[in-house]
Amino acid sequence: MSIKLSHTESVQNFFKEVSGLTNDQGSPRMKALINRILHDSIRIIEDMEVTTEEFWTVVDYLNRMGARSEAGLLVAGLGLEHYLDLLLDAKDEAAGLTGGTPRTIEGPLYVAGAPMTEGEARMDDGTDPGTPMYLHGRVVDSHGKPVAGAIVDVWHANTKGTYSYFDSSQSDYNLRRRIVTDADGRYRARSIVPSGYGCPPEGTTQELLNQLGRHGNRPAHIHFFISAPGYRHLTTQINLAGDEYLWDDFAYATREGLIGDVTFVEGEAAARDRGFQGNRFAEVNFDFQLQSAPVPDAEQRNARPRALQ
Image (cartoon, rainbow, N blue to C red; front, side, top):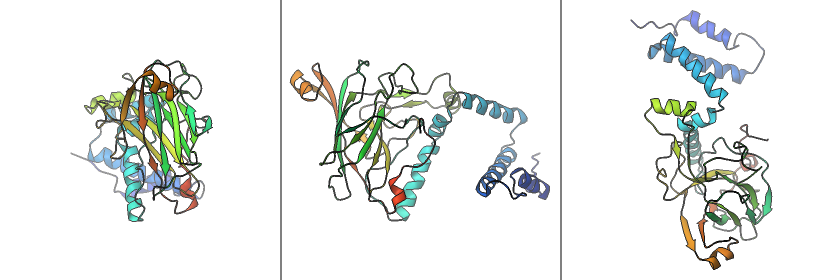
């Protein structure tokens, strides 16, 4: 027989005390959030008849997940980060804010303070033997006019699927740059073709995904923050066409309008024109369209915690 106590006055009062609602100290917002989390949690325990063993298994899982710093990976894999994008899209539509390049998830691997260059940047440090990549495009407004002076903050993985700062074998800010667009709104970067990656097979995220019968793989992709005075900040990424996980991204970041076509170019002369040695490179051309900022705050990215802020 299922026993339920969450509706009783004594339990309701108990969690008011636990949440701090019976004192006049602390944060009212935090109190309200904790009280709601506690009530929803105990209803799950009651409705799903969670056993004591299952409860403490979850506590142990959370401890191990935190020790591995995988919370950011888990919220992407469970679709929560993608849901936030869907919610923001719905709010935009309700407010009549439509058009422009779609947003998609930031992920947990941004690092602030990458070197800034005007117009063009070399992103890699020359140690990765991957295929050279020429990444370029324009930043335009809602009418297709160039946005000069926009900051294209771009970062991506190496050919092993790892990111500088989080991978100590890479040099500082390898494959991370901020590029200021020129008078025509153009940005240009010389880099290498990134690889996709999978969740660490021994990690807590993959442990849960295994229980769900899911893989933990991402397609090759390139992250962007795009910002300019007078325009809404854009957080997005492009997933590279042709990858086997393009539409099977465990983090649900692939969206229509965010597919980067990759063209492989042969010939020493063509490579030399793009600043590469050898006779083969990849070219990715992707333009970004910004919305006008309805209020000044919209020019800023959200204030979530990030590395090196």
